[in-house]
Image (cartoon, helix red, strand yellow):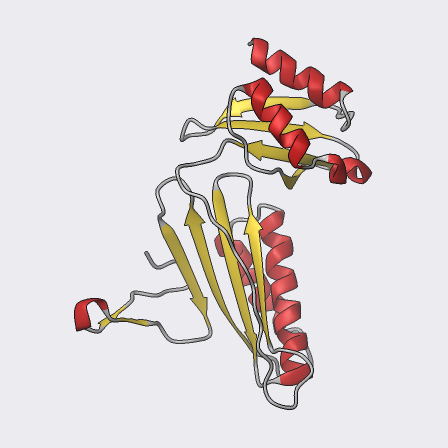
Length: 212
């Protein structure tokens, strides 16, 4: 209880000058801290503030992610899981092109999962870039809004079909649980992958919902 009170006072009277503060344990027993605050103060939640909050809570917290708490904006810190993930993105252009037709994004959802999104636009260059960028933007927006995964996929597919031009993008999504390493894989618009463990080719089960 003392840790809760200290954290609340720190977030409300410190640099963030937050509004409401909530602390709870997730289903895996990890501490979660959420602070509602005006959007223009989000950038104040730097590494030094996270370290200070970790010390007050007696837990090693990840850097916060932005979440929507109803109509309000909030920052959420989550106690680190057993696994950590470092990501990097590199794009390679086709010869003679100025932009890449593939777009990638990484989303940490504040619930112990990391979403890796890849959108591959039809063709190459400017047109493929535009299609893949639009697809990825929709995916990011819906995932950050905590829309159910099945609803995300069907909604994005419907929105893309509204275009008068023929558009097409393949989508690959990997959702990694940083507690146990379990990974759900979603593929849209392309065939399943072939895995080759110990020299034996195996077809991965793939559907619109997930493959494990």
